[in-house]
Amino acid sequence: MLDDRLTEQRNPRSSGVDVLSPLELVDLINSEDQTVAEAVGAQRVAIARAIELVVHAFRSGGRLIYVGAGTSGRLGVLDAAEMPPTYGTDPTMVQGIIAGGPDALVRSQEGAEDHPEDGTAEIDRFGVDEKDFVMGIATSGTTPFVHGALGRARECGAATGFFLCTPPTPELLETHDVVISPLVGPEVVTGSTRMKAGTATKMVLNTITTGAMIMTGKVFGNLMVDLQATCEKLQDRSERILMTILDVDRSRATTLLEAADGQLKIALVMGSRGAEASEAGRLLDEAGGVLARAIGSQTADGFPGSGSTEGPATEAQST
Image (cartoon, rainbow, N blue to C red):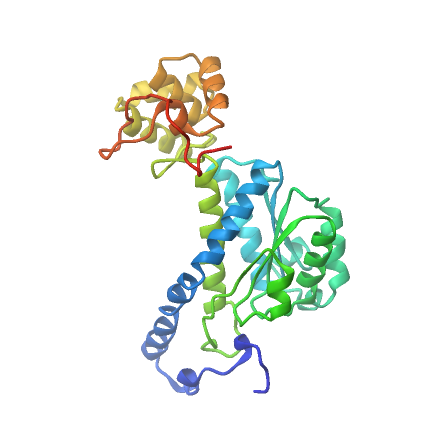
């Protein structure tokens, strides 16, 4: 097939895929999937740079905005939608733009990706400015909607990134603040980028937002602490985290959480520092929302250290 894009080339290992048994199909797809993590790992420096750009945007009062079409767009919207319940973020902090609008999330709108002016219009509708970081996702590297959106974002002063699964052109590298290009190779079914390319996309987006949330104080040790106990599952998780970090029983954890109006970080400061909710909120604000600076970092056994807030903040903790 005469196409330079890696995502459109034929995979010689799957040329006879149409005559394989179910088990042979599973083995082939699985063997191809095992190459994805290595391809993503080869982009570690670029992914780390993307995390830095997202953290800078957040600390400047800006947003992370994904832009994509088809599978790429859906994965961006999915990653954005997972931030509020996981990390207690404002829904506007991480957002996703998909070609064709919300309808494209559940029904393909293939022609929508062909119009760069629609991407431009979406950037204007979102009010993108110099505080934001806009990440375009186009595994083929050529989606006009995405290029239109990113071009307009740069005109608005935003930092921009590009994710693709084919070798980037020099122009692409020169244009954007970061380019992430895991080369996962041709798909088992030619051009079906919801497969390996889609898996790579999910892995990279997970890493970017998880890294950014950790660096902005949403995690203590390896526990998600910016929870709002808004349902039974999150109430139970919040109580278990309190029990683990403060070494208290379930009853005490419930009492702290109720006094903190369901805000886990406030409850943790209250329990650790013996403070009322208002005082705990003030201490947390002074620490820039970073729990380790308010109550002390965790020791190896999983419980808080001395509780001292003295000492220099790390690069990850500074605000």
